[in-house]
Amino acid sequence: MRVLLGLLAAVAGWAADTPRLVYSKSFPGSRPAFVEVRLEGTGDCEYREAPDEDNPLKFRLSEADASAIFALAAKLDRFTRPLEANLKVANMGIKAFRFEEGATRNEVKFNYSLDPDAHAILDWFERIAETEQHFINLERSARFDKLGVYKAILSLEASYDRKRLVAPEQFLPLLDRVAKNDSYVHMARERAAALAEAFRAPKAKPE
Image 1 (cartoon, rainbow, N blue to C red):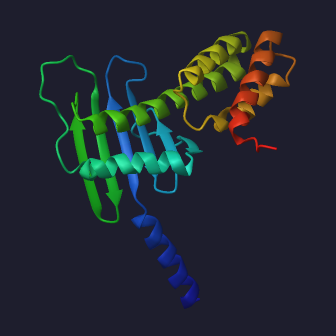
Image 2: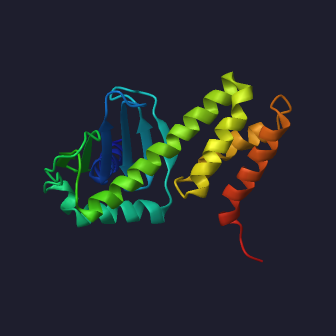
Image 3: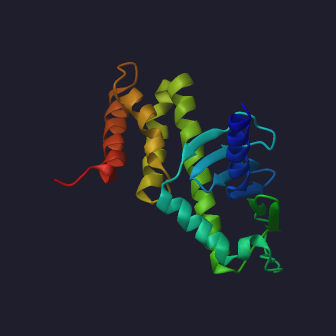
């Protein structure tokens, strides 16, 4: 029993020391008015649209994508230095980056930054948020607005064409469900099948 408890404590301690990046943006009046993305060093990710949301969307980034984001955080000294440009610009929402590892907690907030690495990591998190908003929209349409599914898929496809989606494989169960269900209009089923095929294509092994 003592050995088991020791192993459990070791695992818990290891999990607590796993690095985490947290991005949030508060922008009252926008839709959504708040977003938060939590990215673990393992690539596991959570998306929320309320600080106290207890049922976030959960998905996983590829090792390459997660590594790229953590590398940018390292270039920004893990958020130990200011990023605000202190220029007279419009309110673009208060962004916050936080780095967590063990007892370490570094956080920086800003409205607008001139740092190119800050822009790069912000774009990553904005793409993640945009992706999850598409997921919420498609899932809601598939459940409650079958006539709106086609429009939701077109919007998703537009973001994919602009290379704005992250971890698109998370959409496959939804797209497959639409493609195989006769209760959706033919155009939606056809478009869903084509988009699912495109999302699967990068993982197809060459002959």
